[in-house]
Length: 95
Image 1 (tube, rainbow, N blue to C red):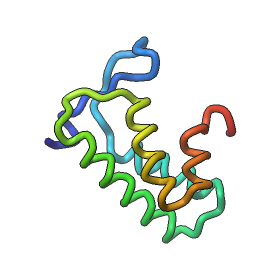
Image 2 (image 1 turned 180 degrees about the vertical axis):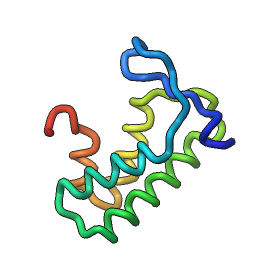
Image 3 (image 1 turned 135 degrees about the horizontal axis):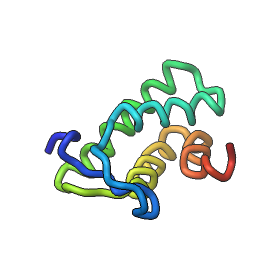
């Protein structure tokens, strides 16, 4: 399934759904890695890897929540960069 065909239910369901935007995921992973001062190459590799894992996870789904994305992405990022994963998962509490 193409990432453009996946609807994302926003946090709390109060806002309308929007199409999954891979670039938003990649940029948020990069930001988390940069916030813990990961080297640029390491951050880019982590973002690509997490993006790929999230796409595999949501391949058979037509609708997911923004919380799903955050949970799955944080799970995969934790394997690569635990500190960045913590920032990514808890960004509203930490930043």
